[in-house]
Structure formats: C-alpha cells, structure tokens
Length: 284
Image 1 (tube, rainbow, N blue to C red):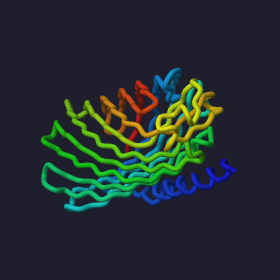
Image 2 (spheres, one colour):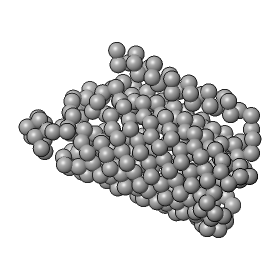
Image 3 (cartoon, one colour):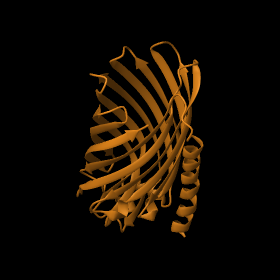
Image 4 (cartoon, rainbow, N blue to C red):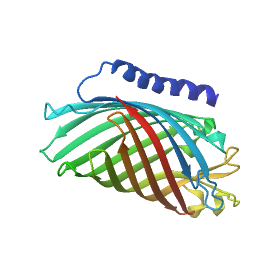
C-alpha cells in the first residue's frame, strides 16, 4: 500500500518537473540546461548516535534554470531538476528526486537583489518508508559587490511528509555565504547554516517511551529494517559549515567539488557528519 501511494505521489511531482523541463526547451536569454554526475562520500549515512556508517554515493542529474534576464527590475525565475543517487553499500537508500521551484526576483539596487521561490519536491527511496513529498519556500538576498566578490543570505522553510511518520519533518533554516571569482574560470565559496526542526536519528540502544526525555511526549520511534536499528524522531538544532570550489574548462564543461561538516544536537544526543563530493557537468 505504501509503495503504491508513494509511486503515485512521486509520479505527479516528477511529471511536473518534466513538464517544466520540456516547456522550457526553447532557449532564451537567462536560460540554461545543466547535466552532470557527482561522486560523494558521507561519514554517517545512517544518522546514528552510536554506530555511524560511511558510504560512497554516485549521483546523476539534469536541471533547467531560468534566471532573471536583467532587462527589467522584476523578473520571474524557474528551476526544475531530476536526480538519481545510488549508494555503494546501502542500496536501501537509493533514491530518485524531482523538484520544481518557480520564483520572483527583484533587483533592489545595482548591488542588492532578492529572490523568493516556493518549491515542490518528490522523493522516491528504495526503502519506501522514507519516500516523501515536500513543499516549502526559500528567500535569498544577494549582493554582487564587484565582478569578483559576492555574498548572500537566505531563509528556507521545508515541510516534508514521508510514507512513515518518523521520517516526516519540518525545518526552518538560516544561512550565509561568501564567494570569490578568482578568475573568469575559477571560484571558491564558503557558507554557514543554522537549522531548527524535526529530524530522525538511529540508535542501537534500547529505547522505550518511558526512557525518552519528557516520557516520550512529542517523540516518534520505530524499528527500521533498512538501518537495522531503532529510528527516533525528535526536534534538533543543526549547524553546518561548507566550502565549495568550481572550475570552468570551457563555457560548457565545468568541474565542482565541496566539503560540508554538520553537527546536529537534540535531547537524545548529538551526531556529526562529514560529506565531500566532486563532479563534472555540462551546461548549454
């Protein structure tokens, strides 16, 4: 039953993303296609408090971006993307994701701009309990100080509804970033994000409602066959620090890499995750 419901919901979102991609096919000023593949590594893919497992992830994606043309002070934007990820060790985490995000951009001054973009995302996971439909909004304030240096700040809200309640969550996040275009072909970027909301952790320790903080009020927990561990949903705070770098070999072919460290803390404890990726892409 869960698999049938998930398939139907995911196909709707994937269909919307594909429709946007196809509708956008005629090239226009400010539009861009982007295809690529990335290989990544995460140190705690099972989100464990006491037995972290690492894995290697291969991701392929296709995306369409409609950016502001620059011909008017107010313009519309659109991003539609499809991606698939395969995990080397834990195939239960293999997933396909479709996202569509229309938006509005306002040029507040020659330096400052604002983009507000609601989004809809569907995710189908091999472990169908984690398959989900998510919606939310992201507001980004950007500053282009000169041709080389830029900064940005953003707020995002996400509400994700999974097939199994323990994997559903809401989240509010605030972030800042700064980047430098060292040459026309090479850039680096650093960023920080703070997020507050629901999340899940796994543990091999025995847990009952009586042993949970607050005697289990507001908590959801169940046993996961995919993780071979107890899964507990709680409210957490997450701090993430990241650095990215990119290089354009040509106007179309580019490489990108990044590293992120995240620490998540809740009543049950804290978990850390290190993730790194590198990839190649082609845009036109």
